[in-house]
Length: 354
Image 1: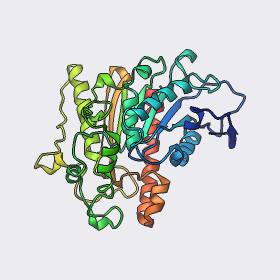
Image 2: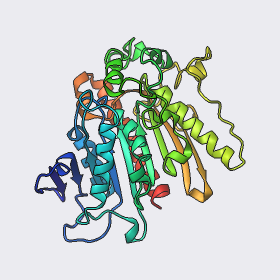
Image 3: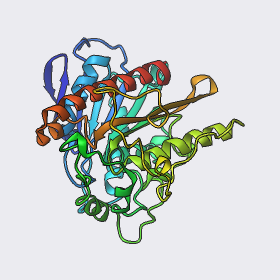
Protein backbone atom coordinates (compact mmCIF):
# COMPACT_ATOMS: atom_id res chain seq x y z
CA UNK A 1 0.00 0.00 0.00
CA UNK A 2 1.36 3.39 -0.98
CA UNK A 3 0.92 6.26 1.43
CA UNK A 4 1.31 9.46 -0.54
CA UNK A 5 1.84 12.86 0.99
CA UNK A 6 3.97 15.96 0.80
CA UNK A 7 5.28 14.88 -2.59
CA UNK A 8 6.82 11.75 -1.07
CA UNK A 9 5.75 8.12 -0.86
CA UNK A 10 5.64 6.16 2.37
CA UNK A 11 5.06 2.47 2.77
CA UNK A 12 3.61 0.74 5.79
CA UNK A 13 3.72 -2.98 6.66
CA UNK A 14 1.32 -4.97 4.52
CA UNK A 15 -1.76 -6.47 6.12
CA UNK A 16 -5.11 -7.62 4.72
CA UNK A 17 -6.51 -4.16 5.45
CA UNK A 18 -3.61 -1.92 4.42
CA UNK A 19 -3.51 -3.63 1.03
CA UNK A 20 -6.97 -2.21 0.40
CA UNK A 21 -6.45 1.48 1.06
CA UNK A 22 -4.46 4.27 -0.53
CA UNK A 23 -3.87 7.43 1.51
CA UNK A 24 -3.22 10.86 0.02
CA UNK A 25 -1.97 13.72 2.18
CA UNK A 26 -2.08 17.26 0.81
CA UNK A 27 1.33 18.36 -0.43
CA UNK A 28 1.06 21.38 1.84
CA UNK A 29 0.69 19.23 4.96
CA UNK A 30 3.69 18.99 7.28
CA UNK A 31 4.48 15.39 8.21
CA UNK A 32 5.20 16.40 11.80
CA UNK A 33 1.89 18.26 12.20
CA UNK A 34 -0.90 16.99 14.42
CA UNK A 35 -3.48 19.32 12.85
CA UNK A 36 -6.59 17.26 11.95
CA UNK A 37 -7.60 17.20 8.30
CA UNK A 38 -11.06 16.97 6.75
CA UNK A 39 -11.19 13.50 5.25
CA UNK A 40 -12.81 12.16 2.10
CA UNK A 41 -13.13 8.40 1.57
CA UNK A 42 -13.46 7.40 -2.11
CA UNK A 43 -14.73 4.11 -3.54
CA UNK A 44 -13.84 3.12 -7.08
CA UNK A 45 -16.19 1.87 -9.78
CA UNK A 46 -15.96 -1.02 -12.22
CA UNK A 47 -19.39 -2.63 -12.01
CA UNK A 48 -18.52 -4.38 -8.70
CA UNK A 49 -16.36 -6.72 -10.81
CA UNK A 50 -13.41 -4.76 -12.20
CA UNK A 51 -10.78 -2.13 -11.40
CA UNK A 52 -9.15 -1.09 -8.15
CA UNK A 53 -8.64 1.99 -6.00
CA UNK A 54 -5.50 2.75 -8.04
CA UNK A 55 -7.70 3.79 -10.97
CA UNK A 56 -8.68 6.91 -9.03
CA UNK A 57 -5.17 7.87 -7.91
CA UNK A 58 -5.07 10.95 -10.14
CA UNK A 59 -8.49 12.14 -8.95
CA UNK A 60 -7.60 11.50 -5.31
CA UNK A 61 -4.16 13.10 -5.56
CA UNK A 62 -5.58 16.19 -7.24
CA UNK A 63 -8.38 16.63 -4.71
CA UNK A 64 -6.05 16.17 -1.73
CA UNK A 65 -3.59 18.77 -2.98
CA UNK A 66 -5.98 21.39 -4.31
CA UNK A 67 -8.45 21.31 -1.43
CA UNK A 68 -6.12 20.39 1.45
CA UNK A 69 -8.04 17.25 2.29
CA UNK A 70 -6.91 13.84 3.45
CA UNK A 71 -8.22 11.42 0.82
CA UNK A 72 -8.46 7.68 1.46
CA UNK A 73 -9.18 5.39 -1.50
CA UNK A 74 -10.84 2.12 -0.48
CA UNK A 75 -10.82 -1.23 -2.29
CA UNK A 76 -13.08 -4.26 -1.87
CA UNK A 77 -13.63 -7.86 -2.98
CA UNK A 78 -15.04 -8.25 -6.49
CA UNK A 79 -18.00 -10.13 -7.91
CA UNK A 80 -18.82 -12.73 -9.14
CA UNK A 81 -16.46 -14.49 -6.73
CA UNK A 82 -17.62 -12.13 -3.99
CA UNK A 83 -21.20 -10.97 -4.71
CA UNK A 84 -23.30 -8.74 -2.47
CA UNK A 85 -22.76 -8.17 0.44
CA UNK A 86 -19.08 -9.25 0.48
CA UNK A 87 -17.65 -6.04 -0.97
CA UNK A 88 -19.88 -3.91 1.24
CA UNK A 89 -18.77 -5.85 4.32
CA UNK A 90 -15.15 -5.27 3.31
CA UNK A 91 -15.76 -1.54 3.05
CA UNK A 92 -17.48 -1.35 6.42
CA UNK A 93 -14.57 -3.10 8.12
CA UNK A 94 -12.00 -1.02 6.27
CA UNK A 95 -13.73 2.29 6.95
CA UNK A 96 -13.82 1.55 10.68
CA UNK A 97 -10.21 0.32 10.66
CA UNK A 98 -9.02 3.54 9.03
CA UNK A 99 -10.89 5.61 11.62
CA UNK A 100 -9.25 3.53 14.33
CA UNK A 101 -5.78 4.28 12.95
CA UNK A 102 -4.80 7.24 15.10
CA UNK A 103 -1.60 7.78 13.17
CA UNK A 104 -3.83 9.42 10.55
CA UNK A 105 -4.83 13.05 11.28
CA UNK A 106 -8.52 12.55 10.50
CA UNK A 107 -10.79 15.30 11.80
CA UNK A 108 -12.65 12.99 14.17
CA UNK A 109 -15.42 13.89 16.58
CA UNK A 110 -12.90 13.58 19.41
CA UNK A 111 -10.90 16.46 17.90
CA UNK A 112 -13.88 18.80 18.23
CA UNK A 113 -15.94 18.12 15.13
CA UNK A 114 -16.07 15.16 12.77
CA UNK A 115 -15.32 16.25 9.20
CA UNK A 116 -15.62 13.05 7.19
CA UNK A 117 -17.41 12.31 3.92
CA UNK A 118 -17.62 9.39 1.52
CA UNK A 119 -17.70 9.56 -2.28
CA UNK A 120 -18.15 6.83 -4.87
CA UNK A 121 -17.80 6.52 -8.63
CA UNK A 122 -20.30 4.43 -10.67
CA UNK A 123 -20.74 1.10 -8.83
CA UNK A 124 -18.63 2.68 -6.11
CA UNK A 125 -21.35 5.30 -5.71
CA UNK A 126 -23.79 2.48 -5.04
CA UNK A 127 -21.39 1.12 -2.41
CA UNK A 128 -20.77 4.56 -0.90
CA UNK A 129 -24.48 5.15 -0.28
CA UNK A 130 -24.84 1.56 0.97
CA UNK A 131 -21.82 1.92 3.29
CA UNK A 132 -23.46 4.80 5.13
CA UNK A 133 -26.38 2.49 5.93
CA UNK A 134 -24.33 -0.31 7.54
CA UNK A 135 -24.74 -0.68 11.32
CA UNK A 136 -21.07 -0.23 12.19
CA UNK A 137 -20.76 2.97 10.19
CA UNK A 138 -24.10 4.47 11.27
CA UNK A 139 -23.26 3.90 14.94
CA UNK A 140 -19.75 5.36 14.66
CA UNK A 141 -19.24 8.87 16.10
CA UNK A 142 -17.33 9.48 12.86
CA UNK A 143 -20.01 8.30 10.47
CA UNK A 144 -19.81 10.31 7.23
CA UNK A 145 -21.44 13.71 7.46
CA UNK A 146 -22.03 13.54 3.71
CA UNK A 147 -22.35 11.02 0.90
CA UNK A 148 -21.54 11.87 -2.72
CA UNK A 149 -22.69 9.74 -5.66
CA UNK A 150 -20.92 10.30 -8.99
CA UNK A 151 -22.83 8.80 -11.95
CA UNK A 152 -24.00 5.99 -9.68
CA UNK A 153 -25.48 2.63 -10.62
CA UNK A 154 -28.20 3.02 -8.02
CA UNK A 155 -31.26 1.01 -9.12
CA UNK A 156 -30.78 -2.70 -9.78
CA UNK A 157 -34.53 -3.33 -9.82
CA UNK A 158 -34.83 -2.14 -13.42
CA UNK A 159 -33.61 -4.07 -16.42
CA UNK A 160 -30.41 -2.55 -17.77
CA UNK A 161 -31.80 -2.46 -21.31
CA UNK A 162 -34.88 -0.52 -20.16
CA UNK A 163 -32.55 2.18 -18.87
CA UNK A 164 -31.33 2.91 -22.40
CA UNK A 165 -34.64 4.70 -23.06
CA UNK A 166 -34.06 7.15 -20.21
CA UNK A 167 -31.29 9.22 -21.74
CA UNK A 168 -30.98 11.50 -24.74
CA UNK A 169 -28.74 10.65 -27.68
CA UNK A 170 -26.86 13.44 -29.45
CA UNK A 171 -25.15 12.11 -32.62
CA UNK A 172 -24.03 15.61 -33.61
CA UNK A 173 -21.48 15.55 -30.79
CA UNK A 174 -19.47 12.81 -32.47
CA UNK A 175 -17.95 9.66 -31.02
CA UNK A 176 -17.87 8.77 -28.14
CA UNK A 177 -20.47 11.21 -26.82
CA UNK A 178 -22.61 10.93 -29.93
CA UNK A 179 -22.87 7.13 -29.97
CA UNK A 180 -26.37 5.98 -30.79
CA UNK A 181 -26.18 3.29 -28.10
CA UNK A 182 -24.81 3.82 -24.61
CA UNK A 183 -21.32 2.36 -24.44
CA UNK A 184 -22.21 0.42 -21.26
CA UNK A 185 -25.27 -1.25 -22.83
CA UNK A 186 -23.62 -4.62 -23.45
CA UNK A 187 -21.73 -4.98 -20.20
CA UNK A 188 -24.20 -3.51 -17.68
CA UNK A 189 -26.43 -6.64 -17.52
CA UNK A 190 -23.34 -8.74 -16.76
CA UNK A 191 -22.42 -6.48 -13.85
CA UNK A 192 -25.90 -6.80 -12.37
CA UNK A 193 -25.89 -10.58 -12.78
CA UNK A 194 -22.47 -10.92 -11.17
CA UNK A 195 -23.19 -8.71 -8.16
CA UNK A 196 -26.70 -9.73 -7.10
CA UNK A 197 -27.18 -13.26 -5.69
CA UNK A 198 -30.18 -15.27 -6.84
CA UNK A 199 -33.24 -14.49 -4.72
CA UNK A 200 -31.87 -11.21 -3.36
CA UNK A 201 -34.40 -8.41 -2.88
CA UNK A 202 -33.20 -5.85 -5.41
CA UNK A 203 -35.20 -3.07 -3.74
CA UNK A 204 -33.12 -3.41 -0.57
CA UNK A 205 -31.62 0.09 -0.16
CA UNK A 206 -28.19 -1.44 0.39
CA UNK A 207 -28.44 -3.14 -3.02
CA UNK A 208 -30.29 -0.32 -4.77
CA UNK A 209 -29.70 2.97 -2.94
CA UNK A 210 -32.29 4.54 -5.24
CA UNK A 211 -34.77 3.18 -2.66
CA UNK A 212 -32.99 4.68 0.37
CA UNK A 213 -34.86 7.14 2.55
CA UNK A 214 -33.58 10.30 4.17
CA UNK A 215 -33.27 8.43 7.45
CA UNK A 216 -30.98 5.85 5.81
CA UNK A 217 -28.42 8.34 4.53
CA UNK A 218 -26.18 11.05 6.01
CA UNK A 219 -27.62 14.48 6.65
CA UNK A 220 -25.96 15.80 3.49
CA UNK A 221 -26.28 14.08 0.10
CA UNK A 222 -24.90 15.19 -3.27
CA UNK A 223 -26.01 13.26 -6.37
CA UNK A 224 -24.17 13.83 -9.64
CA UNK A 225 -25.20 12.40 -13.01
CA UNK A 226 -23.72 12.47 -16.51
CA UNK A 227 -26.30 13.52 -19.09
CA UNK A 228 -25.28 10.95 -21.73
CA UNK A 229 -25.40 8.00 -19.35
CA UNK A 230 -27.99 5.24 -19.07
CA UNK A 231 -27.77 5.55 -15.27
CA UNK A 232 -28.43 9.29 -15.05
CA UNK A 233 -32.18 8.93 -14.63
CA UNK A 234 -31.98 6.84 -11.45
CA UNK A 235 -29.65 9.42 -9.89
CA UNK A 236 -32.06 12.20 -10.85
CA UNK A 237 -35.01 10.27 -9.34
CA UNK A 238 -33.16 9.78 -6.07
CA UNK A 239 -32.17 13.44 -5.77
CA UNK A 240 -35.68 14.72 -6.50
CA UNK A 241 -37.36 12.25 -4.16
CA UNK A 242 -34.98 13.02 -1.28
CA UNK A 243 -35.49 16.76 -1.81
CA UNK A 244 -39.28 16.37 -1.83
CA UNK A 245 -39.24 14.07 1.21
CA UNK A 246 -37.05 16.49 3.11
CA UNK A 247 -39.42 19.35 2.39
CA UNK A 248 -42.51 17.34 3.37
CA UNK A 249 -40.86 16.26 6.63
CA UNK A 250 -40.55 19.94 7.50
CA UNK A 251 -44.03 20.96 6.41
CA UNK A 252 -42.79 22.54 3.19
CA UNK A 253 -44.22 21.95 -0.29
CA UNK A 254 -42.80 19.03 -2.29
CA UNK A 255 -42.88 21.08 -5.48
CA UNK A 256 -40.48 19.16 -7.74
CA UNK A 257 -42.06 16.87 -10.32
CA UNK A 258 -40.63 13.41 -9.76
CA UNK A 259 -38.98 11.82 -12.81
CA UNK A 260 -40.81 8.81 -14.25
CA UNK A 261 -38.76 6.34 -16.31
CA UNK A 262 -41.93 4.91 -17.88
CA UNK A 263 -43.51 8.24 -18.83
CA UNK A 264 -44.29 9.25 -22.40
CA UNK A 265 -43.22 12.81 -21.59
CA UNK A 266 -39.58 13.41 -22.44
CA UNK A 267 -39.11 16.01 -19.71
CA UNK A 268 -39.61 13.44 -16.95
CA UNK A 269 -38.61 10.31 -18.90
CA UNK A 270 -35.09 11.48 -19.79
CA UNK A 271 -32.51 13.35 -17.75
CA UNK A 272 -31.34 16.61 -19.31
CA UNK A 273 -32.53 17.90 -22.64
CA UNK A 274 -32.38 16.91 -26.28
CA UNK A 275 -30.27 19.86 -27.49
CA UNK A 276 -26.52 20.03 -26.90
CA UNK A 277 -25.29 22.38 -24.22
CA UNK A 278 -24.19 25.88 -25.16
CA UNK A 279 -21.90 25.92 -22.12
CA UNK A 280 -18.89 24.18 -23.64
CA UNK A 281 -16.65 22.93 -20.89
CA UNK A 282 -19.01 24.25 -18.23
CA UNK A 283 -22.04 23.36 -16.12
CA UNK A 284 -25.66 24.51 -16.50
CA UNK A 285 -26.46 25.75 -13.02
CA UNK A 286 -29.43 27.98 -13.85
CA UNK A 287 -31.64 25.10 -15.05
CA UNK A 288 -33.14 22.89 -12.33
CA UNK A 289 -32.99 19.89 -14.63
CA UNK A 290 -29.23 20.22 -14.24
CA UNK A 291 -28.73 21.60 -10.75
CA UNK A 292 -30.64 22.31 -7.57
CA UNK A 293 -30.03 22.50 -3.85
CA UNK A 294 -32.35 22.05 -0.88
CA UNK A 295 -30.97 23.05 2.51
CA UNK A 296 -32.78 22.62 5.83
CA UNK A 297 -32.35 23.15 9.54
CA UNK A 298 -30.06 26.14 9.18
CA UNK A 299 -27.69 24.29 6.88
CA UNK A 300 -27.53 21.12 9.00
CA UNK A 301 -29.05 19.02 6.21
CA UNK A 302 -29.08 19.26 2.42
CA UNK A 303 -29.75 17.46 -0.85
CA UNK A 304 -28.03 18.53 -4.06
CA UNK A 305 -28.38 17.51 -7.70
CA UNK A 306 -25.92 18.14 -10.51
CA UNK A 307 -26.29 16.80 -14.05
CA UNK A 308 -23.14 17.36 -16.10
CA UNK A 309 -24.25 18.34 -19.63
CA UNK A 310 -23.10 16.38 -22.71
CA UNK A 311 -20.96 14.12 -20.49
CA UNK A 312 -20.69 10.35 -20.64
CA UNK A 313 -20.26 7.86 -17.79
CA UNK A 314 -16.80 8.20 -16.24
CA UNK A 315 -16.08 11.58 -17.85
CA UNK A 316 -13.87 12.61 -14.91
CA UNK A 317 -11.61 9.56 -15.07
CA UNK A 318 -8.35 10.25 -16.93
CA UNK A 319 -7.89 6.59 -17.93
CA UNK A 320 -11.33 6.41 -19.51
CA UNK A 321 -10.93 9.73 -21.31
CA UNK A 322 -7.65 8.58 -22.84
CA UNK A 323 -9.20 5.32 -24.04
CA UNK A 324 -11.72 7.17 -26.25
CA UNK A 325 -9.07 9.21 -28.06
CA UNK A 326 -11.25 12.14 -29.10
CA UNK A 327 -9.56 15.50 -28.43
CA UNK A 328 -12.74 17.60 -28.33
CA UNK A 329 -14.43 15.19 -25.94
CA UNK A 330 -11.30 14.93 -23.79
CA UNK A 331 -10.93 18.69 -23.39
CA UNK A 332 -14.64 19.21 -22.68
CA UNK A 333 -14.62 16.38 -20.12
CA UNK A 334 -11.51 17.72 -18.39
CA UNK A 335 -13.03 21.17 -17.96
CA UNK A 336 -16.32 19.78 -16.68
CA UNK A 337 -14.55 17.40 -14.30
CA UNK A 338 -12.63 20.35 -12.84
CA UNK A 339 -15.81 22.44 -12.50
CA UNK A 340 -17.63 19.55 -10.83
CA UNK A 341 -14.79 18.88 -8.40
CA UNK A 342 -14.62 22.56 -7.45
CA UNK A 343 -18.36 22.60 -6.79
CA UNK A 344 -18.14 19.51 -4.59
CA UNK A 345 -15.20 20.92 -2.64
CA UNK A 346 -16.97 24.25 -2.08
CA UNK A 347 -20.03 22.39 -0.82
CA UNK A 348 -18.03 20.16 1.54
CA UNK A 349 -16.13 23.09 3.05
CA UNK A 350 -18.93 25.66 2.94
CA UNK A 351 -21.87 23.52 4.03
CA UNK A 352 -20.94 20.04 5.29
CA UNK A 353 -17.76 20.80 7.21
CA UNK A 354 -18.47 24.44 8.03
